[in-house]
Image (cartoon, rainbow, N blue to C red):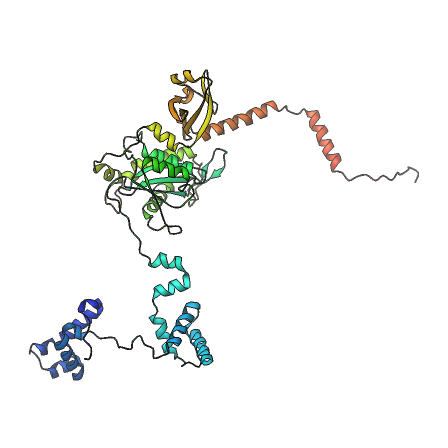
Length: 477
């Protein structure tokens, strides 16, 4: 053999397996158990072939029994210009057959007086092209990145190291405050280490900075439910490039709370499968059994947004957080709790309110409190600010209380006595007010008398008749 073969590790498993099979055939001769003629008679291999294998093994060991590629395997005995032209034609016409490519290159060669390739040579060139190069040429950069670029799989090492946020339009139809069918949006914030849900927000409105801020407010602060213990300020907050995530407000919040905002590459949402998997779980284990699920044909009364919110919270706490996760092999809430670390919390709830409760309104303090949405909010500290204008901040999901700020400083939390024992949504108040307005409108509109209805009907009949002719007709005509 002219050239020494490459190291054994450079060959494929299949090539090494074939080499071992050859060795087993010549092994009885090498150890003196059988003569070469006997092996020829038993195996049917030519004596010349066996001599070649024995010599190769004695020289190079097992590597010598691996079939070497021809030195001209990737050389098509064509001019470089012809090979390059064939490659360009294959990239330019990806849907054309090789027969078509062969005809085109033959025409080009005839014009440029090049050596014409055979069909077998064109076929060999096509087979030699890498699939990655074909994908890049035919499908573009984005398709190439999706298929061949390496993905950096970031793994959190402890709770609250990485939080991830995203929105999805849920596959369920609800009854909105106007009594019409509508699909809700869900905003989720997930802890990557434990896969626990830190916070969420349901709304009929398309994703915005308000929904993100309210979900983050719930995620950071301690929950009222004892079995939902995840809280604290995350070290990194990973999102896409949506306008709600890239808003100046969220940037300011991140700087103040010392959160590092991390954005996914524009147009490349890969690597965010953890939160996508949760959305899939919501569909498969939660929404499918509810009325209004868009893939079911059952005709049942639709849920309201408030009802779905309550059911979703129960599902997260009692079902999702208690199921063994397929990747971590632990229950999400157990994994978050077991580390025993102390979460980094804001200095106060008021600081968090000022940062994240974007829903802010200016209101004047009256002698009986602050009036807002037809409700009255009172608190002893307001007595010293009667006549002053303050800023109130509130969570639209619960109007039982509002935060009051004066000159950008927290003053107090005022409570509405009428709904202090309930959780009342802003949309519920608006819907109730609209219903009341419609009822009153019917009351103040006087009913028509029978005579008025008859007169109106006659006027309608007269107006719908054909216009009479102006020509006078006499009886004696």
